Length: 79
Image (cartoon, rainbow, N blue to C red; front, side, top):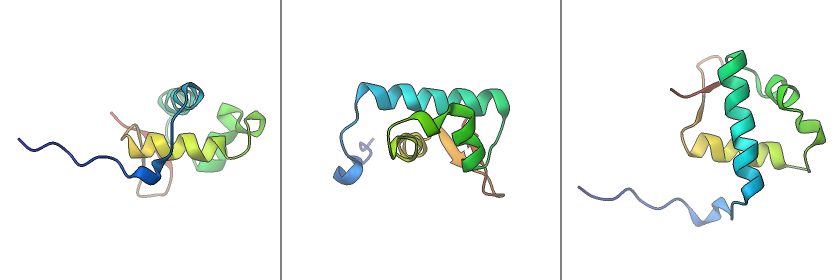
């Protein structure tokens, strides 16, 4: 069975903090259900995160298949 292709090198380096942030995003969606991006940002307190951290963590969560967009444009936890 062939191996999946590697993730694009433009993804950037992940740090321990981004895994924590991804976890916050997934837990919020599991607890509260699908959310619009602005509402999700409020739920996780992204206003207090460093600049662009929310968008970065969300992009990683989507790339890893932990979060997906619904047909209505909301974000939802996979699984």
